[in-house]
Image (cartoon, rainbow, N blue to C red; front, top):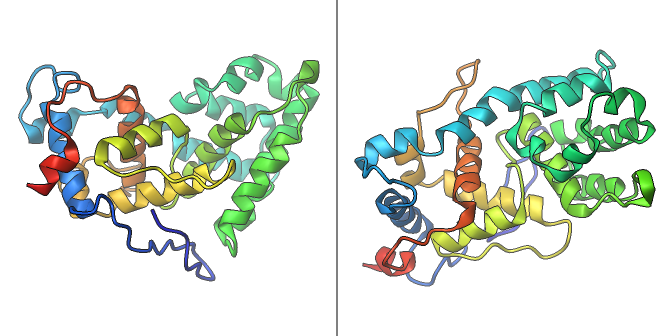
Length: 273
């Protein structure tokens, strides 16, 4: 679905190479067909709301949770980097976010006292945010995201357990999405695989550490389409009045992760008509 081809000095800019999404239809057409099919599904529109009304309400809880919590996580990370807050402040911010709260690692370690009593906790946080400055002004965002995940995998948890890569991806992707909402989305492979399948393309992941980057590229491509902006643009703003369509798509990806069973036609077939 494309690779990073250009990184500017002061802001990471993904230039997506052209990708033949399904051989016949362009991505905008596929996204339009996918959204309309979701709206016609009895699973995701049980009340048969008109398309425009459905778009106003669909995945609202998950989308709003990201708008409510990710700015606070970003602020908490910045304060921690600046030495102005304690690890416990990060846990408090994490605990409000649906993605992090549902993460197995948080459920295992995110108990009262974790970031004040557990000696491995600060090491985990330090490794999550050690690339913070580079994320702000990246020269090699891909490499630094991967290095952050690899360094987390070196952390030994209590009982001799290893910090599994998929735990690292969830934590780091959520932090990245809070710090750089213009570039990243919260990540679990099954969610983005399912979304890509529904739209009519494949979710490409070349290696164990590539998923966060691949999901970011896919999400940026989708949210830049006229169809996505037409149906879901202008509905959410943060406290500063900024819109983050990647958060909108991430919320949708969370909601549809179970599949789209109640659809009669193949999306790519519809898009070709």
